[in-house]
Image (tube, rainbow, N blue to C red):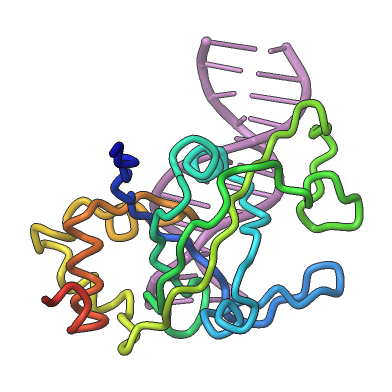
Length: 176
DNA sequence: GCCAACGTTGGC
DNA sequence: GCCAACGTTGGC
């Protein structure tokens, strides 16, 4: 019997803004609790090519993403989501009414791509950015773009950092 | 609201 | 292709 080869998941961090912020009359706030309520969400609105390329070229179904609360009073890691649909054109680039409308994009040559993600869990404990910054010399966290670069709304996380953060946030995750 | 760090744009 | 001007990100 042939066994389907299962690909090991890769890990990422995606940023969302839990604060109220109006864009064209639409409140764009989106926290891990909103993610939980919706269940599945299209990750629209990424308008940075590096972040877009990660979604377009690297993210696969079943990859896991740390869900980060950004641009708010207490920035940090709130939960976990899973990629449930591989990249396809972000429909907001074609929508003239959208804040994310891109006049240079066409259906034939879309410029922006997104994935769909599904809610996995809210971590038992919120891990503030400050806590991670205090640990930035830790060998597991040293290479995180979140800590030594910032300003990238979709970023890769290596396995050792992912496991370390999950253990901080949820002590029994990964335990036997 | 400030502003540093980036990314993008567009004139040349 | 350079690079100054401008816009955005996002912690503080």
